[in-house]
Structure formats: structure tokens, C-alpha cells
Image (cartoon, rainbow, N blue to C red):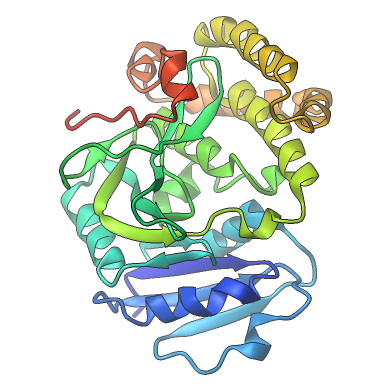
Length: 321
């Protein structure tokens, strides 16, 4: 009998934080889970420095770095559990984290993705992430403000640093897109889940402390390149007609202004790569739009139209549908 939840941790040179992450999993009040650690060809494999864990687990050492997207896609392919949780190796869940997510999945069948309240590991008073949000021009961000109360709320998408998904729903829309490698792959997944008619929600009582960016501390140029490329791919693949006609000019206007102000200086190269490979995304777009189950008008309710929300990293959420 498979566990109810498969918890997936994708590691890459994560020795500084992975032990604390897995120790926090050992303190979970919800125990019907199986851990899968997928290591992306780290210099030192987790299986060599982590001792026995007090719960069911599997270490899978890869010979190449598939990135977060590739690792999660592999995990979804292998999962036998009806629910699959993604947890970053630098995220440390509170003891009731998994219990709260599993309960939300039981109580809210309309949703296929459940995000967490992410607090900064360095400053617990600061919100590191509360849902993923999408500007109508295609730029996405992780909300850094949490609304009052602790009841589940709905938003555009969820951050995969600490999230729970319905395995069948993820498979039905084509899994994580391996081409993204890392960054925006969770935004892309949330977008496709929404187009397929599913809801995405955040569970405020499911709390993790998140370091954030641990795998990119010495790889800032790669980070910027992936942002520049992947945000264009998300827009091109998923934004339905006629919204895409409005979004594309706005997207390039925002990127131009960001370049003038010196923000994300390395993202231009990534955007150029994304543009060169637009044909791949257009092929995917045709399949995604053909399978869409919601109207552009419905999607408009989940897009953010105020640039100020993007600039201030607000968290536009709905308490009911």
C-alpha cells in the first residue's frame, strides 16, 4: 500500500541545509508519507553524509543535473502516492506542515495545488512567500504579504518550494516542463492547472522557514538568465487568445523599463534564448490551449492588473471562489 503522500526533495550541493530539512520531516505529526531525495549530481551525494532516517525514504543519485523541473518531473513519473509534496532542501517545515496540507487536500477537492506560508529563516517575522501571482503582462512573483486569518485562500498559483499537488492532476496536464530546468516551472505548472479547470490555494497554517536561493548563491548569472528565458516561455505557452495580444506588448514594455533601471542585468541573454526557442513553446501552446477548460474571462479573475501589486510584492488572494 503506497503512502498517501510522496515528499520530494531535489538537492544540489545542499549539504549546508539538507540535514535540517530532513530532520524537520522527522518531526511531522502526519506520518503517512514516503520521502524521495533526488540528487542532481552534487559534489557530495546526500546518501554519503546522511545517516538513517526514522521514516520511509529513498535516495536517488543522478549522473546529471536535471534541475528542479527535471527532478520533479522524474518524481511525478515515479510516484505511487495520490499526493506529491515538493520541498526545497533549504525549507524547514513546522511539525504540522504536512498534516495541514493533507487536510486541505481532503477538504478542498476543487484545488489541485496547495501552497504554504513561507517565513524567512533569517527573520521569522518576514514573509518569504505567500502564493505565486501573475501580472497580466506575464511577470510573476512570490507574494511577500500574508492576509489576516489562517483559513485557506485561493490565488493564481503556488510556490513549489513547499507545496502539495494532486499527482493525477499534474500528470494529466503533462507534468513539470523539464525544459525550464529551474525557476518559473512552478508558475508554468500552476498556469496549466488553472487552464485545466483546477484551483490553486495557499494554506496559511502550513508553515515552513525558508532560506531561499541556497543553490544560486554563487550562480547569479545563471539565475538571471533562467528568469529572463522562463518568464517569456510561461507567457507564450499559456496566455490564451485574445489576452496574449494585450500581454505581449506589456511584457516587453516592463522588461525594457527593468533594463533601463538596471534590474536583472543578466536576464536579457536569457530572454534572447527564450525568443530563439519560441517555436518549441508555440508547439506546446497549441496543445495547451486546445485542452483548456476555462474561458479567458475566467482567467482574468486570477491575473493581477495593478502593476503596484507586482512592485510591492503583494499577495492578491480570494477567500472564496
